[in-house]
Length: 145
Image 1 (cartoon, helix red, strand yellow):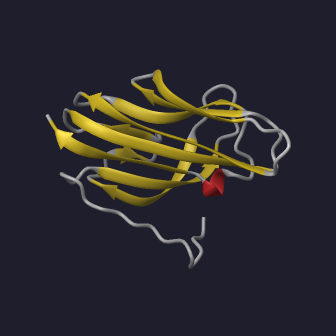
Image 2: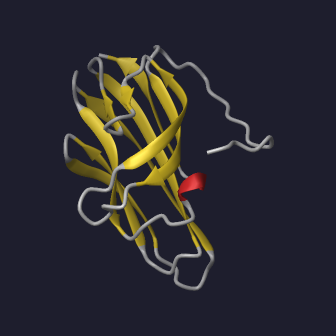
């Protein structure tokens, strides 16, 4: 994905060297079985977000902040994206208006995570055809415990 010159990314270090900020670059064709997001990495301090699996693995116990923003473009399907922690949905976001050409869904959460806990996004419903290039996923350690 080529970033346009008017795209600016601001990042602040918060309490540690564990953080990531990603732009979605595509989704796999197996959207109904196990959708795998492919990301372009803008920030991956500590390298705890694994690009091969699209999973963040917590390197230590602590409170982590995660947020995602997904966009569907020219797509009349309802989409649902969930943030999964260790295989279980924690939060979801929906976009389902049938009469608009663009619609966004966002959510964020603070999570208590143990060392080796895993977090990823899962496309539960629909597809992000056309909107993937406007979608982001980020996370960072707020403070260690």
